[in-house]
Amino acid sequence: MIRHLHIENYALIEHLDIDFHTGFSVITGETGAGKSIIIGAIGLLLGGRADSKALKTGAKRCVIEMTFDVSRYSLTSFFEENDFDFDGAECIIRRELTAAGKSRAFINDTPASLAQLREIGERLIDIHSQHKNLLLGKEDFQLSMLDVVGGHQDLLAAYKQEYTAYRLLVRELTAAEEEARNSKEDEDYLRFQVEQLVEADLREGEQEELEEEAEKLEHAEEIKSALYTAANLLQAADGSADVLGQIKQAISALNPISSVFTTSEEWTKRLDSCYIELKDVAEELEGEAEDVEYNPQRLEQVTDRLNTIYSLLKKHGVEAVADLIRVQEEWEEKLRRITNSDDLIEEIRQRLEVQKDKALALAKKLSKGRMEVARRVEKEMEERLLPLGMPNVQFKCSVVAHPTELTADGIDQVQFLFNANKSGELKPVSQIASGGEIARVMLSLKALIAGAVKLPTIIFDEIDTGVSGSIAEKMARIMKDMGQCDRQVISITHLPQIAAMGSHHYKVYKEDRTDSTVTHIVTLSEHERVEEIAHMLSGEKLTQAALDNAKALLAQG
Image 1: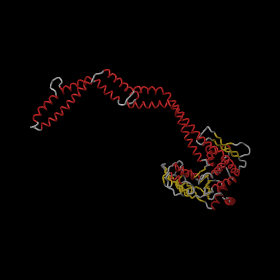
Image 2 (image 1 turned 90 degrees about the vertical axis):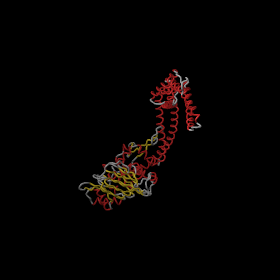
Image 3 (image 1 turned 120 degrees about the vertical axis):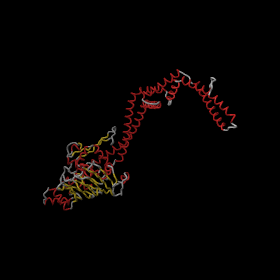
Image 4 (image 1 turned 180 degrees about the vertical axis):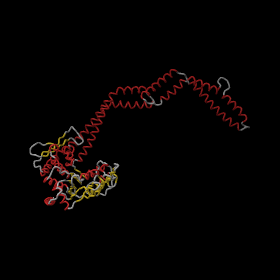
């Protein structure tokens, strides 16, 4: 629950520090004094949208900070999961906003995201403003009320998990069917392309080998002539002077002097080596020349094969045979998927049916629980509304199940039906109830779920709109009862009957200065409370009757 609120430079608030207490507290003040500004600041602190226009005129920075006592609430897991410091007792949330529009948030002095602010905020405070009465017209709100009262959170979470898996399979099936339809149209084209590539019987490295062979075949005569010329020059097969013969003669000339001129022995060895090497070269040249043959038929075959490869490369926009092979493999896989698409779709459908049955089983269990709790809510709501000036009230929770229509919340449509009179038919509460009646219905619902949800603080922002007199007093008693059991209930009100019920009373007022207007909030003493409530009864001018009436209200409260 809230221990302390600190606000700097927010709207009309220059500096505000106020302590809050357990139980039922009230905040009063004239219209326009700034009560809604305080609610706005709390909303910003708990992750609301930041707007630099919210800064007090001329201020460079706005700071909103709240200190909470969370010692009696199970929040340790939140701090551990988000790696925030936590002493087990206190939580401090701070948000800063600059004139440039930059926003920073902290939880226990550790930087926090807006999502984290919202998450912790939902566990600490429920702010019920006037516009939230409109929620009575929304089916998802009404359904969530039944789940909260029924304690269906774990079952609902399990259902949502199965429903999410079901929806994923629905999307998978839709995509598979769409792909199958599109692929069927392209099947003939794909099959022709694959058959053409299969027929080509491509092999990696083949292009380079063929290009080399084509070059050799195109220049066969030139190559053959050059090889024979080189071999003849080395061996002089025609009987003319040859290189090998001359080297042999040089060796023979050096041999006789090797005993008297030792250096010649080294030269002889080197010449021997040259002779052997050149002889091998000459033999290889001659052998290679014999193998080279001009073959127009083979050249035509190689050229045709290369033209086939070049045509396929150009057609498919790739640069190498390896890329063509990859294209072939990809298209073969597409064809396999097309061929097997019916089997794949059937397999997805079977999984979808199994998953739907799992989700539906939980949805039916959830629906049964909602129908059971609906009867309890109807009974308790009528009991709560009867003393609030509705002696003939009828309240019904209509739960209609549609087992073939799974939604994110199950198979149920929930609607709160209402009639405050003896005659007339039950109709949706948002259509038939007056503003005052809706306020009483919402307060009764909040009181009903307060026991089911361990929420530290509930703030009612003028929930008493449209009521007065004894009804207001009874609404105040409901809020006072809600403030028991270590819960903090704060009501912003214009009604003296509600103000008198508070264990603590705060007043919001404006101070007009020479150059600005500033909002303040103060805790009222017993004497000040009497005067404030008397003003609420009689207006600006205090009368003794109003003072006496105020004292009586306070004594009764």
